[in-house]
Length: 381
Ligand SMILES: Cc1cc2nc3c(=O)[nH]c(=O)nc-3n(C[C@H](O)[C@H](O)[C@H](O)COP(=O)(O)O)c2cc1C
Image 1 (cartoon, rainbow, N blue to C red):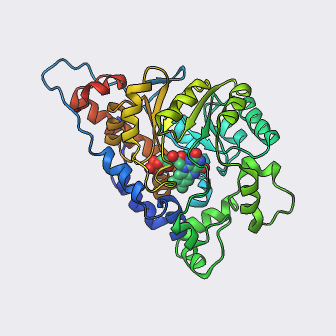
Image 2: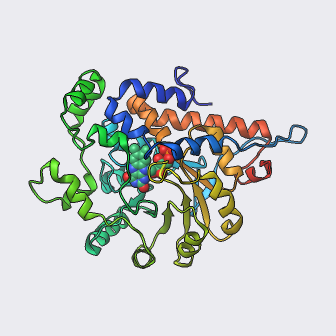
């Protein structure tokens, strides 16, 4: 049994620790959803409405958390979702989480706008990390990124369906979020009152979109970076774009952000290998459903034809159990892992995976679930 830091026995404790250690604008960026944050709250609330049936009077040989996904066996049925600007929230957060995922043998997904490069993350994970592509406006840039991910040995490419337009996130607008952080008096005060964060940033150097560095015009001021990024990425996914990527990418291809059966059907017909039912953690459409609802429906219709995964709103190990029981083959979390890094720095990624595994194992032993694929038998419908 792995050691658990008893000061942080749950993700909620890590969240509280991270709230204290991060400057307000960085915590707001991590925590926030779009508009009135209704979808954000609904995600977690509704996944916790799921109820499980225990079996107490039958033989139980013990729990096995191992899960095979796209031909690889992982040690747990959850992975680390792609998060942009990780290094702004905590110095070297991308590297910390990639290493933790690799040590625990769970997948880590690198965002196109993560703060470590494809090559660095591939090295840290011995080629096991997945890559999430924001769709570039230019085919040439798309191909260069795909080729780099393939050359680095990354096995799975994730493309995004749920960001057809920039989100409206009041907290980010209010804080003038930019990279590096805007030097408003309020932001400077927040940095000064969070010295561990500030010294860490000084030591690590200002966070940059490392995968994108070769394509940024020389001498581009940080002020113009946002404009450049807007022009560089085209946002809305469509069948032609999926088909072109499917043609070039020889590894497994996953579409993230699917919640509608028609979209699922289209993506599957274009040859994708899996879908992540996601609403971007409640950051795009406030009137959207919580992801557990479409997951349950999609699992019935498409569960045998594709690999269905889920994220958005899962925080603790029991949330993972509820998602698996509802038909997900695999789960991802974004904020949970960042809370871990915010609270515990370089040890945070490792610790977060450890407690999630322990919490999930406890649920399995409690309900008498032997293997991850047996979870649906425990769903109370
Ligand atoms: C701060 C933040 C940044 C994110 N950046 C990205 C990104 O660059 N690419 C991406 O595909 N998803 C991004 N997401 C969405 C996550 O991959 C994931 O879908 C979401 O965090 C899951 O919800 P959860 O945080 O409730 O677990 C981001 C989420 C957060 C919270």
